[in-house]
Length: 518
Image 1: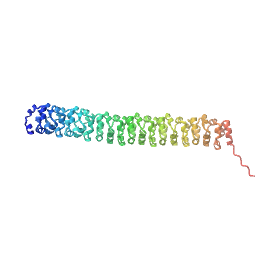
Image 2 (image 1 turned 90 degrees about the vertical axis):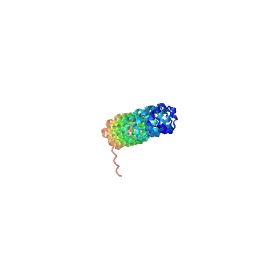
Image 3 (image 1 turned 90 degrees about the horizontal axis):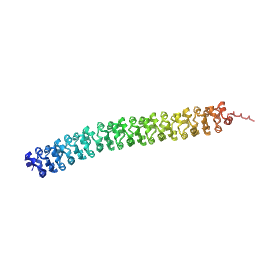
Image 4 (image 1 turned 120 degrees about the horizontal axis):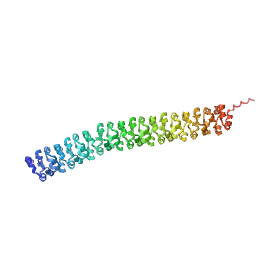
């Protein structure tokens, strides 16, 4: 009975073997003292059952040595209570093995102190489970060592609570592997402070899960570095909210890759600032999608650079709105390619400025489409440089209006090719001014179709040079009207080819006087 066992001299305990130990009634164990237990041979400990272990008084646990603990069977640990475990000397914990630790009831883990936890061999941590992890007190987490963390199974971290992780020493916190970090509950990750996240190695960020990212407060994103962002798995970006994305330091955006950028939700893109967008690497831009582009705030477009624009997929331009296009720096337009320019919605073209139009590269002009040209304001169309006009597809000129044609610089009209001139609608060519028509090469005058010639304003015809008039065909001359011909000087009429002049001269004759009344 307890009294009898408690009366035995400590040195007498040295004679126990495991069978004798296992034969003691559980109720008798309540009489054992620390000084008695300390004398027990380690090999005798293997006979202890969970019932016997559970019956030992907590004070007796203070007598355990590392060797004794190492001989205990895993089943014996299953009977331990928090107050018993809490009495084990820290150095005794050094004898614990993986199966023993794994057999401890979760409730018993609540009795472990920081010193006890810190004394556990790293190898023993390989069997700790989520329930045990969650039962540890926050104070106990202060005892974790890096080597212990490295030995723990990833699933064990799924039991970690927010207040526990806050107490983990920085060195141990940094020792977490990606799969361990990825097992942490979202609410636990959400409680992390920016300073803690800043301590994590970049490689650990590859374990982030979408739910964890979604749980982080926006302020936590302020501690992210470019390397950390670069290690985040694309799926993690899918959990980001606008205010979270907006809280990332602009420099952190330098770590982003195409698949990461493409994984951001359109809603999240609404949080991006011009400073952040400016820091995105050009090689990340191929990941941009139309819906994402359409969701960016117009102000963010002010951050685009030439190199970034050049790497955007054409499909991304299909999501652009007028106010977004209008906010893009003119210098950024230099990166545009034909397929990108051609992908812009006609409605978006209404937002383009003259300064932007002037910066579009010559090589991109071939992508301009008729519907896009028709949507441009006269001011923007008129901003086209002469060499840009020369690159326009002839069919595009078929959609321009008279006010657009009239806004072009005279030198730009001078770059029109015969095929381009021939595609301009008669109603549009009526916008050509005298200063513009002077710039058309004489040899290209024959490209003006008869119907176009008839639509020219009289003063415009009067602005033609003698060399230009010298190229007039009879078909063109037949379309001229008296008001048009009236604008020609004698020297201009004289410059017309003979056949064309013969057609025009009757229009110059003064009107016959009315016959006198009978």
